[in-house]
Structures are given as structure tokens and as C-alpha cells.
Length: 372
Ligand SMILES: [Cu+2]
Image (tube, rainbow, N blue to C red):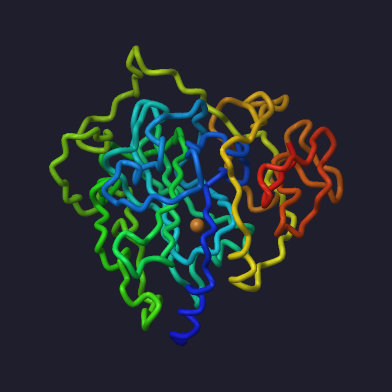
């Protein structure tokens, strides 16, 4: 087992560097930097577990233009800003709903992924060795419909005091094609509501003094399933907005007349993420000192039109491939260059920096530049 000294020093090494969830890939293709994600106005954490901001962060009840197509079983890769904060990462889904864009995220969620503390490393350290990315799959048996995908990195370096744990949260909008029936997925939890400030995985009085992280599990209960046999979720009485995960017979989603029509982004022909190797971070201090820098004012975001090379397909994305993703016309990179949407720079980045023809390396923040 790991010595308590090692665990404690890992926590001590953390400093106040904040982070946001800024990009995701569906089977290795991405709609672009910050596309389809409800970006909060800052990279500060949520600390009040009773706040509606626990669902999708500050301002996260308001949708963004793009909803991204995916299918059950697809691999989702999320990427966050650099983080020296020790703690787990979890993913949850809200839905299905008629319109992800219109959904607030306040209500019932079910957990689909969790990474805590493995082989002496917290999730943020494991991600730090993988370009701050983490992969998981969408469960099979999901009912077709639109969803919010919630990515949460919980930072425990202040967890020795009540209210000191820091929740970093980001929500993406997905349109998922699946085979499940309504109500197949569970158990569900309510956000806000399910987390309590004094839960033993949120308030950890001995986090710097004898805390054994090896048995730690993140808030939100167990990772659920969508086989229809999940235990019935305890449902706190709720008069707030509740997603249609319950008994309603499945019917074709019909947007209300007032609901904005979502722009569905298919990512089937967007260039695959850069496979450029990234040097692993060898010291917690190394990236603890990396101050984050999303300032919410990136002036040029990749637009849908940029993300749609010729051959753009509006159906759900193609099945994943173990090998390289099929190249769409105009997205084939030259040898040694970084493909569109691949990372090409950043203060801790050690990979290739030359963008394929037709794209240029643009700085998104001091720690992340990509070819667009
Ligand atoms: Cu921070």
C-alpha cells in the first residue's frame, strides 16, 4: 500500500489552479474547441453543493447552439485544462429529453463513468499523463434522444473543511442514438440534492492526516446501467424540472413550438485528434504550478462551418475504428503535421507543432493551442 506520507504530499503539492472542461471527442473526432459545451463564465469551482450550479456550473442552465451526435457504445474522450488538484472525475447523463439545448440540467442524472484513485494516482494525475484527457464509453441500452453529458472533476485539497471541496463541472449537449426503452437507465440521483456538504467523500477532515485514498469513491453513487434492471432510484420529492427518464412511453421527441431547434453537429468527417505523443507529467508540482487560463473570451471559436469539410455527413458518426479514423476529403494531414483540431502547442505540450495545410496553430489558452 502507499504510505500516508506520499498521499499527503500529493495533496500538499496542489495549489490553486483552476480548470474547465473545454473539448470532447466522439470516437476520436471532435466538433471543436468548446463546441457543444456550456462554458462557465470563469474557471472557478462550485463549492455550495445545494446550488443549482452543481448541475452544469454557473450559467449552465442555458443551452448552447450545437448538440453533437453520438451513439450508445461510442467512446467519449473529454479534455480539461491542466489541473494540479487531487481528486476523481465522474460523468453523468441527463435525459433523454426532447431538446438538450433547452434542458436546464436541474433534476435527475445517472452516473456512467468514474475514475478515482488508482495505483497511487488521482484521476487528475492520470489525466495529466494523457494530455489532460479521459475516455469512457456511452452505455449500451440508452434510449434514443438528447442528453446533457456532465463532466465533474472534484478537487479535494480543501476537503478538510466543510464546504472546502471544489467541484469543477462542465456540461455538453449530445443527441444519442440508442436501443433502450424509457426508464432503462439508473439508478438516478438529483442535482442539486444528492450531494451533501458533510458526505464522507466530500468532507474529509483527515485528508492531510491519515486519509487512505485507496478506498475512495466519488459522490453520486454507483455507476449505473441501462439494462432496465437497475435498482429503482430513491426519488426525493421534487417539484423541479425533471427529465423524461421515468415511465413515459417512448415517443418520438417533439420539440415544443417555443423550443429552439438544436443544431445537430455530426462529427463523422472531422479530422481525428492529434495522436502526437505528449510527455507525461512527472511531478505533481510540475503542473500544480501551471496556472490555468481559460478566460471565457476566446475570440475565435471553431464554427460549425469550419467543422464541416466537404463530405460532411449529417447522420450519426461512423463506428469507431481501432486504427486511424478514416480521413475525410481535405483533412488528410501531411507526414509529421498535426491534423485539424489536434493540439499543436501549450506550455506543457511536447508534441508536434506543425499544422496540416489549410489550418493554423491557434492559441486557445496558455496551455492549449490547436490547429484550426
Ligand atoms: Cu483551482
